[in-house]
Length: 598
Image 1 (spheres, rainbow, N blue to C red):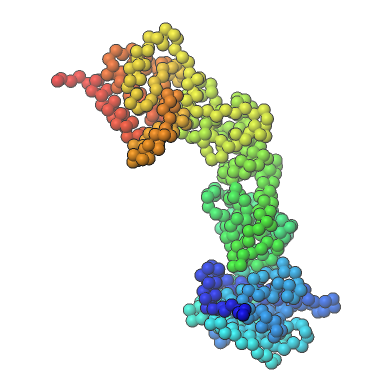
Image 2: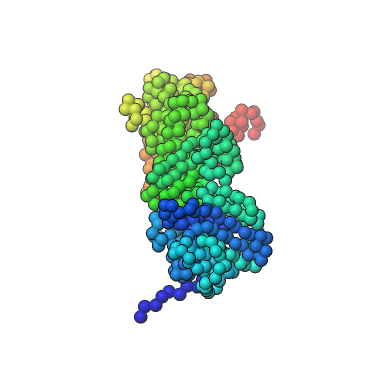
């Protein structure tokens, strides 16, 4: 035969406290939520001609009740005896799920577990309630205990008005959660924006309403003060937010200092004016890490713990629309206040560039306003294209450092696109500007812009190049003799990506066992074209003198010294073999220079 599940209430409370709710403090939120929902239900059931429904929640801490308990009273719809059995004694059964015939989205709570959160701080919960309908309904007392027991009884005339009073008998280890100061702070935190009057003792904790919905000439100053209070910074700017389909209104505060793109941004979120989370994540698109927002939404869904938003299609759509509004603010800033936009980009260019990777309008904004590093000075891509036409760029900062100055001396302007998103933005330019010309530059491409020696001179220098090559063979480096500017630079070490990959494979092979070494051998490429190049500058006086030397040992030491200098000037990493070579060549040249006796 069929049997019903048995529920261990102590186990359920432990599950709530350790896995669902982040802190016992949520009990105040859940009590406020139930009270506001009861008031909402009573208002919805009112008919024309009825007197106005009062909207008041009163919290009485132990120092007011005088018996060590905490009481929360509301002027809501109340419950009949049958409804008390139906809703308060069934875990997961919510009175808001159309049981009263009301639209579910009008209510804050929907999961039927809110009252259980009170067992995080109480051993006993008493609910004294009187229903609005049918008229003359008796007062009912429900008593629930943390061990799973409950009782229901008629309470005579203990409560004459329609509504509900919840009384908590605190646990021995939870007294601190019920003291006036803590209760006042929590009631203010969760309920200060609620559309009902909330009192703790005789003090009203509700405010004037949603700060961003209030008008007045000093509205902006009040929002700045609100941002300082809530987030702790003075905003760079304030962006209005609205998503009607989600019932959302609010503002985004732009950070005045750079933000870490990898850090998860926390936003303050209210649902139907009840605080959902002080640090909600995933509210804005990932690229919008430069903003912190606060908003109230009526249609977004909370998770069961009511501490985060439920990921569904509406939240995804809302996130995209909020991103569109931030993007629109940037476009308006570019049109109306370019100086202010420049200030913003100096602080938050990473976020804008991240958006521009996928958004054409933002790419046009970045091209026009964000200055990039080039070997002819910082300038925007638009200015670079206007001056030079072809956009040559490197994809690594080290590559730009290696070739930037030499390329400029050859009349070859290059953009350093080694910073985050820069290369992707340049590569997207032809998509929005069909006439845009771009070219990715590798260090080895620079040799095509160097001058070859005259045939006779090149023939005369072949013995020197051969001796230099023998010195570099053990390092896997090809020696090339060219003429380039500036003449003060004697040598350059150029390596393309395939050569760098091959070098890394060889270095890794030396550190692994034989099995992995065989695997790396299969991947390695040993083509001559993949070898890095040591380009010696024949316009340099020192190189010319070295090329005329007849002593092969002296040539070897000189070329090894030039190789080491080229590595250092090009910001290349030094392998152990390179460091040893620098040391031996220096000592060898010093030994040649200093006279000595055998």
